[in-house]
Length: 505
Image 1 (tube, helix red, strand yellow):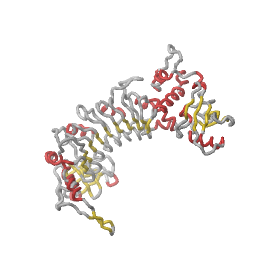
Image 2: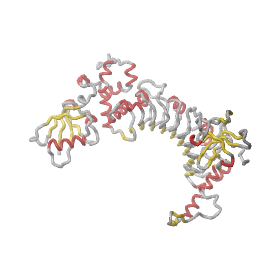
Image 3: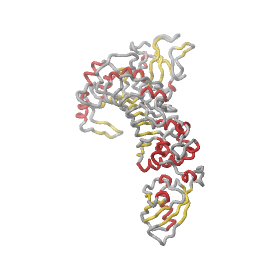
Image 4: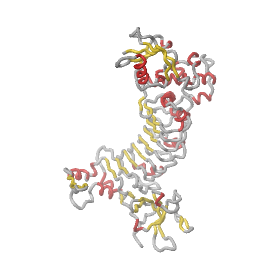
């Protein structure tokens, strides 16, 4: 029953068949004889208990049935980083070259030129990307040998990937800084169970790091990086259930961070307490791209807060509860655009200047009555909206300065969004065909230009020609506005009751 057990087995990663686990206990388990390994399985379904056997707790598991005992001879303790690299790239092959043929069923396939490819891959100090995915890496090995074998002269973007089962044992205390990864630019440590504390302990060895991927590591709390990670441009913390949104404040002063990915992190709110209404925060000074998809953000106040980020240009926010407050996806998009002044891309779709203008004008009009009720006034001397209104609509005052306060006539038309009130009464006119009499028609404001054209083909019995639509409004002083995007609804162009749609072909 006895088998060799590494002296540092506790905390090491092991593989048993096709299942991966972490060693939590090494020793005897009475009344049985010999040494046992108490392991916590990656897949809790593989386990039997929580580390307790016959009333004695030998180790702890996060899952009540995530642990079990195995004999040491059933456990593969994996290999060090350099051994995995040599195995992956052919440096440990006893024979020269590799097999040039491979059998698929009854057919034999011959690979041409494999010798030259293998020879190139064996020059480790010339490789830009190194992957040890699915190589069962359990520990680093001798750092001097890693440095000698993998060092790359000149500029390069070395990108180790240690995903999934390669859950290495990371240092728990401060270690001496090595130059092995002094030129490392991109590092993926997804699903390695590394903690944020361990990241900071290792970070002095990554002085040039620009991209760090840490998804699915059960990270719940963050710490201030201090003087490390100062070159970081991208940080991915997706699928780590952070304790709360305030954890973000602890990484908010990374000076070069341009992209932050927080998909499925469990955050329910975002707040930058150092900045008031209409002011910019000193946090995340360089952040341009933010992804907060699949979270629990339920209040629009968190979207208001994003306007405080001085450099934000791109936002992804799908699958958050606040998006359920508005059933019309087009209106929802317009609200987000109007609330974040500098945004250029929303959910991977570019925001054109015309779309921004339309969104801001509509926002100003939609909440106009609420502005008046809260103390807003067309007279600047009397315009004193309440703190509650400014908290809910921090950009409203700046939009009034940009476009002017909404006119009284605009606000009188604001009614509850019933189906009846969403119908626009429009006059359809063909200016270049005077024999065609004007027609009055009620159309839903959500109707796309493409569907309007289809209706007009049938209504006016127009032959198969390309229709060109525009509209006139009494508020536009004789100017025409082209309806030039077939995918946009009528409301996108701020068309109102009584306006005239002009049809040409």
